[in-house]
Amino acid sequence: MKRLHIHMGVENLEESIRFYTALFGAEPVKTKADYAKWMVDDPSVNFAISTRASKKGVDHLGIQVDSSQELDAIRAQMSAANISTHSDGETTCCYAKSEKSWVNDPNGIAWEAYHTMDDAQIFSDAEQEEQSACCVPETKGQPGCCEPSEKTAGCCD
Image (cartoon, rainbow, N blue to C red; front, side):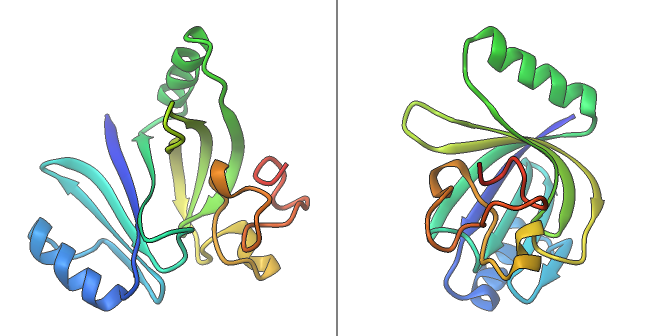
């Protein structure tokens, strides 16, 4: 099964949690001091908010899949269409361990295709290096993004 992913940057997490809980009619499935996530079945969406996003509003979009085979199929679709992807491989981001690939649409909007394997206790691999956010393609190399290291290999090339 594929699920649409939307990650929004917010100013006030508590206020936003109240709003989106009312909108979706459901409590978040994961909350942290800087992050909340809802897994909604109708519509089928993984909706996340955080105070760590690179901007307020839509930070990035994505497609979450249930298996590495589905992720490989999306990668193959992009390759067949001559759309360049960037693979993070296995990484920790948004309190989850996932395998990810990124593309930018023609308007520069970042999309990730990913398969989540497990929960994580930290926001991202970069957090261990005291960084503020996961790198999405448009923020790579900018202040506040991660610095190149073994832990962030593939993220901050």
